[in-house]
Amino acid sequence: SVQVQATVEPTITFTIAGVPNGGATNFNALGATGCGSEFANTGIDSTATFVNLGLLNNGQPNKVAQLLTVSTNGSNGYAITATSSGRFINPSSGFWLSDGNGGNGLTANDVPAPAVIPANGNAFFGISPCGTDVPTAIWGSAGTTMVAASATVSNPWNTGTNGFYATVASHPSGSVSNALTVVRYGAEVSGTTPAGIYTTILSYVATATF
Image 1 (cartoon, rainbow, N blue to C red):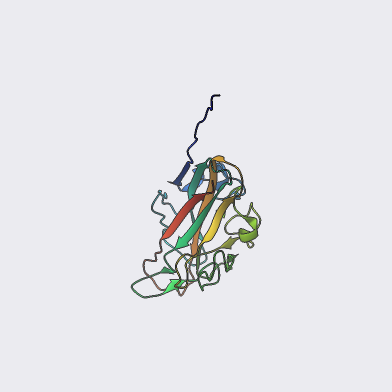
Image 2: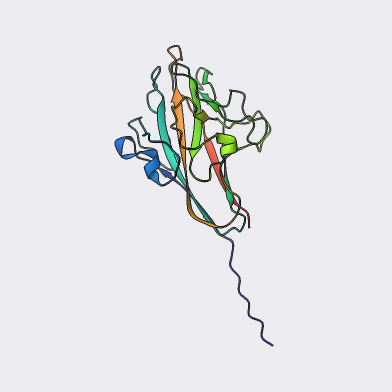
């Protein structure tokens, strides 16, 4: 009687990559689906660790993107979640841009849901993912450009209790190889938005279920 056995170790690989600015950067051409035919328009390339939304002008939404890639042999898929350090704020003045999900931060995981981008001329900041694994129950239908009237954005910061997050991608079953999600960052100011440098920090976590 001979027993033969082997073990396959659980694995997950998660990478964040920058996206070039301008005409070479149609978000749909990055490999994810449902991103809409639009381009980064800040004049500044993003990197894996830095997104510069450039010079914000009244009535002109600025858009930048990053590419998130996951591979895992987890039998029950994976999820990518995002949390920000707080409002998109000018620390010197304390003034912030309104958050896409209503300006009050997360009160629970994925709550409140992302909100529709306001009309041009209204200050806002938020992120909006696109790709096959983006949960439409949270982010709405795919294929919407970030400046469309129906596009939704969120700034997933919490109200003081640690651990809240927004789910930007979810693959609930089966292993995946190089699953792609594009996260788009957008901001706009009004004519009365105070001058200064505005900032926040986004943290992404990819978790596999084995």
